[in-house]
Length: 211
View 1 (spheres, rainbow, N blue to C red):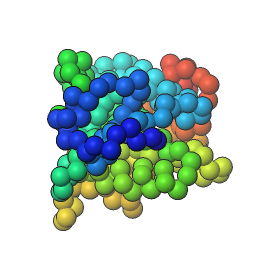
View 2: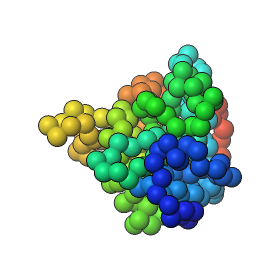
View 3: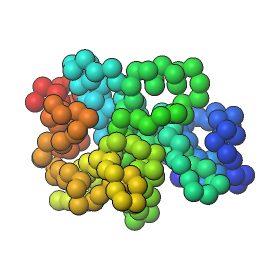
């Protein structure tokens, strides 16, 4: 990722920031351009988004999945503002309609957030540690991390928000862990049956749901 500004912005100022060519985040007040997902990472994001939308349509849910579109403001204990733009985000149709009329910054938690973890220790730290804490503070009820870059260690982790003595959070020991050929179990989508291997294939979302 490449930082495009050194000026530290508030969320309100971020909403007025000139629109760029690709997805962006606000990280501790600094606007950051996100790399366009491509290659296997991009295939995984696209396939998952399509699978979720086909499943949503089949189940009659009033939801919508989008890739690298919606910004999630992160409550902070300090004055440095942060908004994350996840790889995949599921919102209600009411939330989606509201965002079509304004800059895509959610004013309530989405239903589900997914981050596909890129190679490197820094990316692992960001998605498994930093964003794990941030999405919990934003009261996101379900958070997935998808690791696909380490051979024989491909894994999907599904975290569910819990009320803890210290406040809302995710508990690592309670997270669902699903290997390459294990169907991902999601509280948001209890009838969804798809594996990481299928999502990494070249099949379309509709074809994947026929398994």
